[in-house]
Image (cartoon, rainbow, N blue to C red; front, side, top):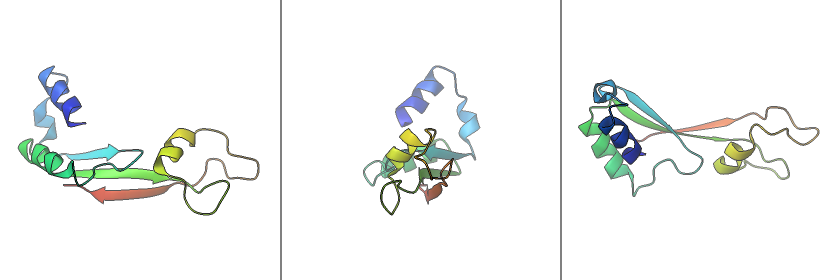
Length: 100
């Protein structure tokens, strides 16, 4: 993710001034930012004077068993028609975490 932003800045597709004071929202289908990447993300956000970085995951109820489907399964199947008898679209659960 950070390399993509850096490329966009280098290619003049993203003005770094737009990051100053901004809240950056990162949506993922797994862990948005593990403890391994968090220090680099915090440094990058501070260097670009971002106000905050928030990670978002979405899950839906499992169709076959109780509990929640993984965020990856939710991302892959959300727009597919659910099995008969299931709500369409399925209700999503939003998981949000402040990363910076």
